[in-house]
Image 1 (cartoon, rainbow, N blue to C red):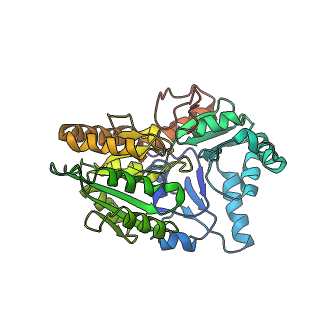
Image 2 (tube, helix red, strand yellow):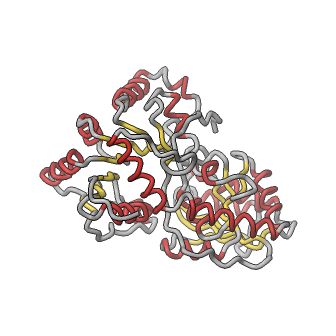
Length: 392
């Protein structure tokens, strides 16, 4: 797509992350650095720094975070003046002020009802009031949802937000230009990377590896990261007698190293439960030719994975089914080759940040001009017509 100077777009986020670079870079290419801005409202947190997140990139289109009131006011003016604004995480004042302009505004939203028993939580007056306020805020016809994850559209429909103005969106990762070299036929080399939190359910991976210990399916399982669950997971590994030559825990590494580890592994296990709104590692693994074996309750799983075609799925909390999927993958090398190729091709054709940026610009121009919307049937900016009602 040629550079387009006719529309000014601003994309807001609470803090800068490396995951935002690919889509922002592509939007800047299309619109130009004067017509595209990414607004950052907060400095990177200490927790994120411990995970290896660095300073924000030096790009002419990257503005913020504000250091004082005048800086915040300047940022607010940018948000008001833009023809289109994509609202990621940002102060509520910004969201209210932007929507009040009547200009096209798209709200990037992961699933809202991550906790089960939503109908019972509505009995809490404060919680119910918060839902009503949000629903009222986004009820206007110029406000659309960019729903991130399989379950996000269903959650938005359940609370009555956005009506039919719900579009598919994602976190778009950097894509290699060629399919990485296929690892040789061997027992599976498994990988998990991230912040060790309870929602990540790394214990499922350990239990599945234990179930397969005597089958010869697993060569090695590498678990990379740190977090509050690390001690408990180490204790579980010791209790299961998963020795370091079988399951190895290593500290966090740089993001470039993560991508290298994905290229070297046979399969990446996304073990997170329903509290994982997306899971950017899923797309990263698939882009690097590492087969994704995912908990179907994680947001990215059912969006990116067609079971048996572009990856493998297992039921939430079911380490036995996870073990069966890994066993299937180990026993069929041709299946490995087919899945990794199809997954990489899908990432290139559908979930590439360039594709997402081009579709977004076409969509926004159509909405501003009140012309017919582009007929994307799947992938970024496709209209979500049904409700994903599987309550994982």
